[in-house]
Amino acid sequence: MKQFKEELATGSSTAIIPSELIEYFNQDLPDGLKYSSMGNDLLYVDQNNMKMTCYVLEKENEKWLSQYHKYIKSNVDILNLMTMTQTPLLIGVSDKVECDGITIPTELLVRRIYDDKNSRQEPVRYILPNELPSTECLITDCEGNNKLKTVLKMQKSEDVEYITYNNHSDNMAFIISLMTPSRYYSGEEKEKIKIVIGVNKSNAKDVKEAIKAYELYKAFINNQMCVNGTRIVLDKSPAEKRAECTKEININMKILKALEAIEGKLKVQFDLSERIDEEVIEIILQLYVSIINNKAYIINNKLETISFTRILKDDELEKIEELKNKPTAFLTTGTLTVNLLGNTFDMYYATCYYFIILTEIIRINKSEYKLIFDCNDEKYHASSKIYLDEEMMTNETTSNFNECFKNARKIKTIDEIL
Image (cartoon, rainbow, N blue to C red; front, side, top):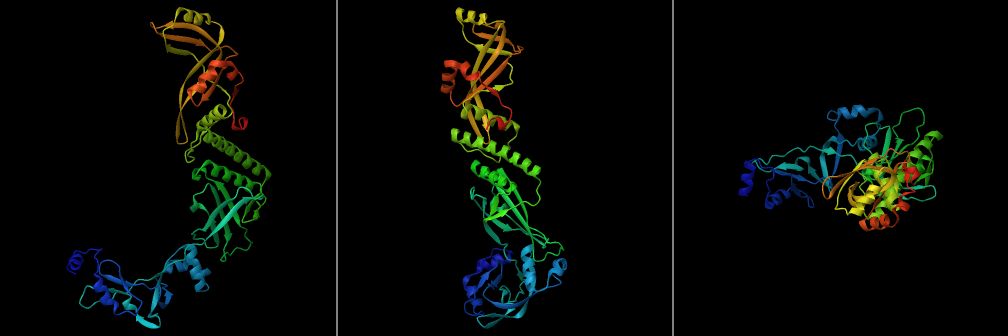
């Protein structure tokens, strides 16, 4: 008790009221009701099990009531509008509060304990809005495939003539939003349900979820999507616009399916929250062609110089000299660090330059050389391939590298690869 008094004297908001003191004040309440501490020197009674007459205070809620007065015909409307706007309202309570048939003075609901008069504290009461409702939905295509369960939750809105449900709180790649007229809609023309579908691949937990989201989006665009078994049909959607959307969806799906194949090969998981720009797409295509299709691809690089360190024997130097000033094929190999959607890979590459002309051999010292090339032959081109490990690269480039690179194709778009 001494500690409690000292804490109150210093204005502590965390003063612990002794249980003996709480029991003393509990004697004023009917059986089954008890006081709890509100911090500092306040006690309160849980009002959930009590009956009382309450009313909305007009002056204190004037702004809200004036905004929605034309929709309010009964107390039910007040409760509905409170829920839709998620607005708590200040209320008044009659002097009569009952619990199990016993009347309790409202002044006992909240009380102070620190002064000699045991002063009573009139509580501030709010009526809180109900939690916004939600409903579980099953999204499929019309054949019942690509099933996706999601929860549509009603959204808070100041425009009470419409009700909006969406699944944004689920943080899914597939986004759906439904807007429908409410019971308070005052328009003359009958409004239809408006549906907005989208894909946010940044929300996808994995590539498979993102692919499914695009497949359902594609079904929606082409009037082949169902919500809880009901087919959703776009009203007067131009065929040209649907075709344009479908084309864009197909491109995104092909990129994701390429990533899915690469994931399986490398046994990793890509982070789709990272931006997929043209540079990233180029890396995806190069990896897909190399390690999934097992083919080389044409690159735009021109080899102008190359330096290397090695002690050459006379016959080795003579063979290099024989290549001067005539078109030939030249192979380079090396290591490669690939950064892709949250993953870093150490890989290997081989590049073959065709119809390249060695114009000069510069010997810098006993073991260091520099080769100068001319890439202006009209038949000049270069092909490259990425390898998972050095052994794979060595085996392929030493056996018959020309066979590996001669049929390489230029990577233009994702459509040419998948």
